[in-house]
Length: 93
Image (cartoon, rainbow, N blue to C red; front, side):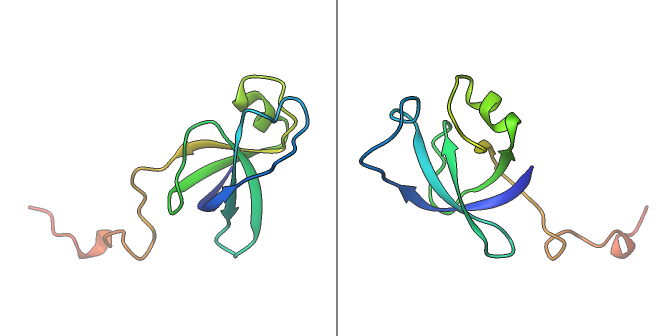
C-alpha cells in the first residue's frame, strides 16, 4: 500500500468489459510519479488516499475488474513528520 494524492478524474470513452462502470482517478505519489487507479469510493481531487496494488487491488474492487491499482480508502486525517508534535517538547505533570 502507498499513500497517494488524487490529481483528477480520468475519462475514457472506450473500456474493456468490467471497466465500463468504474471510475478512474489519476494519482500522484510523494515522489511525483503518476498512476491510474480504480476508484469505487468516490475520491475527489486533492484527497489523500491509500492505494492497493497487485492482486489485492482486484480483490478490493469486489468483482472481476482487470486492475493492478485500486483506491482502498480516503484518508481523513494524517500527520506528517512536519505536523506531528515532538514528544520531547511535551511536559509531563
